[in-house]
Length: 170
Image 1: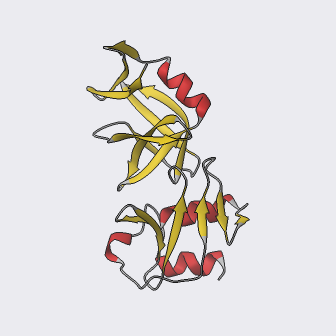
Image 2: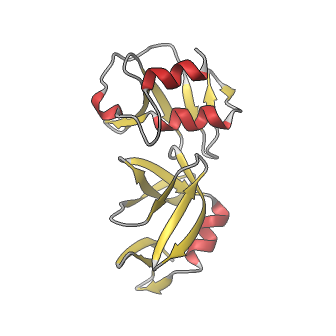
């Protein structure tokens, strides 16, 4: 299928398509995965076109702790090592942290869930980017972020939009 055809099928003009309204049957035999570096693969081959990755990210849906790329007519499981989005930059605007992802999406740290994932003896903060779809921090951005935080009771915190967020134990 061509990228233009897929865009037409999902009706994407701006923002995110209403994947929460789509419940097609699972399409077996197709393999998508996102590795721990945020790289996307289709049938074990890397997806190199950024526009294609951004399009697929726009049709992600999370159901029962699994990720799927969903259109009105098909649903494909996406195996994810850490999380679909990787946070690659941040800035602070009016006391609110704004995060940029590797998939051309930005969001504010406001009323956001943060959880922790243990992987290879590391504790990795995982943040809700949008619609229960999660993101992880690139290592260098995480280190920059913790330099803006403060320590209390052996844990690292930052404050954004008048809310306090714990980013792990020190």
